[in-house]
Image (cartoon, rainbow, N blue to C red):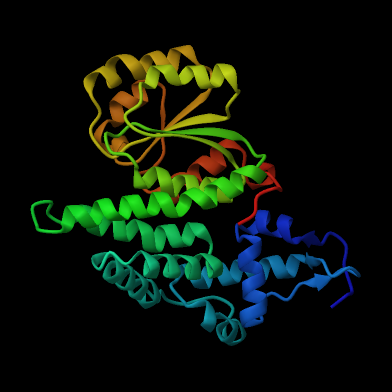
Length: 306
């Protein structure tokens, strides 16, 4: 389709406006015939307002748990989904846990790549990774094998995302953020997931891991101006962090400070009294809240690409 209309968006701008990365938009078009864009004389994709609306309709179906392979038919049958269909993601969770129990990195990577090519990263995070993480955390640590599975997942997630983040960060030119892990555990899976979502949206990230001296984080803002520092943690913090380091960090920097992860539930009053804004224990929700508070979609770098 070569005819164009005014105000059409190239694929990167369409991705930025909808939150669906270019790789996924191309996969929807190529594999399922969804959202066929207009084309320039040179073959570049251009998306109209109607097509952006169609992408939003697709996202609504996906958030209800409908498989992407079923969406084309459903779009013609009725304009909006009427009821949740959780079986898709329940199946994906069970499949993931089965591979995890066998310590099968190859199958985990295969499933991860398949889902990330077809679904927005925020949806994969909220519907797969967060439920899997919650399932492992709820299991008794005294039961044989549970702790090993949990640590295996943390290491796998960290290594799986490392190359992806490195590639994206070479291109990203969006607002600069620091994600600092305040937990005793390293790697911290919620930091990994939040960094995945922020990097996919075009943010430039500095990732710091491993029970950091929070008061020294002000040096980062002094030496390279930051849009925000995000403190991530899943374990109770020490009194010296809460009573000395965090208040010192807050008073010595004019950078916006946020906290995410279970620490916001364990230490909500201490964090708030130190001038730190609370996000969520959920990485997907923390991303959404942070994205809105900082800039909104219109300021995220056009260099972002999955």
